[in-house]
Structures are given as structure tokens and as C-alpha cells.
Length: 418
Ligand code: EPZ
Image 1 (cartoon, protein in one colour):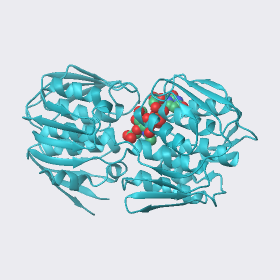
Image 2 (cartoon, helix red, strand yellow):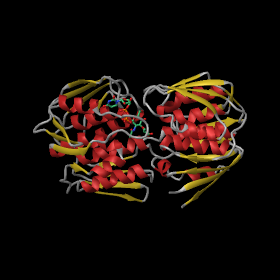
Image 3 (cartoon, protein in one colour):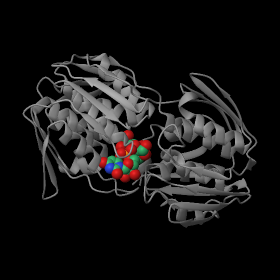
Image 4 (spheres, helix red, strand yellow):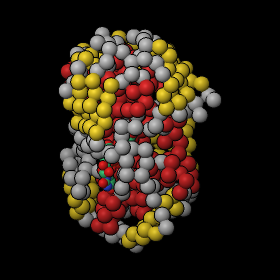
């Protein structure tokens, strides 16, 4: 298990280039099963979640591999419709392969992905939506088996704007007969990116980002080349890092539009930001004013995937903050680790009550999940003294080359392979 050794206290100066969005690349990779022609996805980050998705595609009979910074998927010889259990557990987001595998093979089987490190993560809305398109679903012995002679378009109303359910239904609808309408659809930028990818290979999808998505089914899709949008969560993570450590950092490739909820919080913290369409520069003296409240909401509200990082920032802001996690049940597992560094936080139900301290102190802490682990790295870089962050395989799931990017702007961080 690798770990980071971090000596905190350095201010950060320089540029970071932002990777393609993990949460775009994963559904787009699932969508490549829809066509038997070659698909090239440009500038794909080398992260564990992508490598696991490539393994799943290979199990389905696809040729799926990195070629330089691109990923190439050729599904002409795909024929297996069973998503392997061990990999499905590794990668929860494999569940939205159901939609594309059913579209292609009219059958799909997946181990129930179950809960994971941040909450229950049910898939009832995924299954309800697929049933509305004519999929017969059998849930037995921990497996979900789906069958459908013919997918038929229909209107689906989501009880909540689930990102994964929206994506799964889109992938099942693009080759269904007739029109599919998804109401109360998720509005995340990654949904719009999936729509743009699908249309680039011959689908007919519109409305992504508006809450109502309309899909006209097609009989076959083609291949092509596509570059996903930049990763707004990676960008937000490094913006918060610069705010906490102080200095001046520019994120090349980041989109200000996709991060406006965070940017407005950072203004409240007293940071200076120069926001352009394709880059964001942040300047901070490291002495932050506390924001009164942070509430995670579906897009365009404050992203749950930046909650842990923002909570870390609150621990060294002057004043008190209340952070409310409205989307997932157990997304505060990083808090006990921050308390080892001297943070003053009390968690009650979905709220973290934070009283800012002047400085955190270095400690040995353990990453519990992807975004919580990133928050611990940020805290260690801003703390005084030496820290060790253990179990960083969680972080490797979603951040490529984190230690290189941070060292390039002055962070004192090294990876030790143990
Ligand atoms: C996606 O997860 C992201 N993952 C998550 O990012 C992100 O936190 C989440 O969306 C919210 O933005 C990927 O895109 C691969 P949801 P997903 O379905 O699709 C409830 C990261 O760190 N719900 O929008 O699983 C659910 O319980 C990851 O990169 C149901 O009730 O999220 C939750 O409360 C973590 N029934 C809420 O919806 C369902 O069938 C949001 O979940 C599905 C979801």
C-alpha cells in the first residue's frame, strides 16, 4: 500500500494542467459498447477507475487499451454480456454498463454493486428506468439479470436527479425504438458531455443540462474520436489546496463555469480569482475567513465531491462553518483523521460543525475514500510539520500524478511504495 510523506507549510506557485473528467470518461467508456466501430477517447487520465473499466470492457470481449494519452476501444468482437463481480465491486460506476450492454446484446448480468465507502448508493432508480424501457429484471443471489427482446422508448420521471440513473437510461434509450424522455434528469456537465459523445457517434440526444432529456432511438451507431471535458472536481481540489496553502496557482484547462458554486465560496473565504473559460488563477495569503455554511446539492449546487476538501479548508478558516452533506449518508469518514491533525470538528447526522484553528499540525492519517483522501493531502500540505497519508490507493482511483502536479508548484510531497 503506497503512502505520501508530506512536509507542510510551503506556499504554492505555478501552473497545473487539468485532466479529462473521470466522471465523463467512465460513462463514455460504457457507451463504447453501443457501437461495433472503433472509438478513440482523447487525453484520458491514467487512474485506477479507468483501468478497471478497461478490464471490464475486455471481459465483455472488447479490445480496450491506452495508446499514449488516448484510450482506444474496439467492440466488434464483443459478445459476453456478464459484467464480472469482482470488478463490479471495485468499480461501482460499472452499473451504468447495464444500459449499453442491454442495448447491444439484449441481455446483461451484473453483481449487485452494493454500498461503498460513502453511503448506501442504491440503484433502484436505474432499474425502474430500465423497466420503463421494456427490460425484464431478475434480482437473485446478489446478481441482477436483465433481458429485453426489444427496447421501447418511454417517458421516465426520476424521483431524484441521479447522475448514474440518468446516464444508464440514456445508454439504454439511444437504440430503443421510438422516443425516450427523462424528466428530473441530472444536470451535471458530465451528462452534457455524455450527450455530446453519443451524438458524435450518430445518436440523437438533446436537453442534457436542462433537467429534461429527449432521445430519438437509432438502429445503429458509428465510431469516432472524442475529447471529454476537463475534470471540475480535480480542478476544484487544487483550487482549495492553493487557498489553504497560500500563493498563486493557475489551473490550465479548468472551466470556471462548471465551478461557480465553489468559486463563490472561495470569494467569501477572501481569495482572489481570475476566471476564464479555459483557465482559473487563484491567489491567497493563506489566512481565510470562514464561510458560514456549505450545503452539497445536485449540480449546479455545491458538489458533494468537493465537500471533504471544503471541510478541510474550513478547519483553518477564522470563524465557524457548518458543512451539510445532503447526497450521501457517510461522507464524513475523513473527519476523525483531520482531528488527529488538530482540527476542531463535531459531526452530527449530516452536518459537520467546524471551528477554525490557526494551524493544523502534521500527523499520520489514513485515507478512507477517494475525495476524503484528497482532503487529507490538502490538510497536510497546509499544516506545520511532517505528515504521512496512508492507503493512497483510494486517491489513485481519481487523481492522476497528484504528487508530480503538487511538487511542480512547490508542494513538499513524495510517494513511498511500501
Ligand atoms: C455520481 O455517482 C458520481 N460518480 C459521484 O462521484 C458523485 O458523487 C455523484 O454522481 C453525485 O454527483 C460517477 O459519476 C462515476 P447519484 P452516482 O446516483 O451516479 C441517490 C466521485 O468521487 N440514488 O447521483 O452513484 C443516492 O443514494 C464519485 O468521483 C438513489 O436513491 O450518484 C444519492 O443520495 C463519488 N437511487 C443520490 O441519489 C438510485 O438508483 C445521488 O446519487 C441512484 C441514486
